[in-house]
Image (cartoon, rainbow, N blue to C red; front, side, top):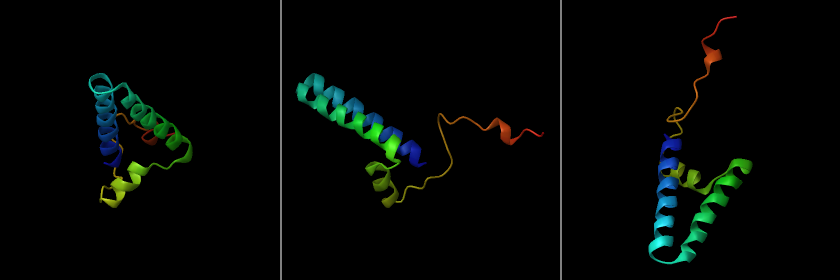
Amino acid sequence: MLNTYFRVIVGFMVLLSVLLTVYVNPNWMWFTVFIGVNLIQSAFTKWCLLETILQKLGVKKGEASGCSVPNINKNRSN
């Protein structure tokens, strides 16, 4: 469940920052850059502020969803 909330929020923030860049001020592109850099650093550090905030709000990690790839070896007998 956490993964779903995370993807929706980050996707919304990217779309919002692009719209703000186009219609308000080109400097809003820095917000898009910040989001991208944060995603890259979280891949290496395994820590993301948004994930911490969502967990404190009570969102459970739960099962994988959306784009998860099923483990085909789990059901295979040798």
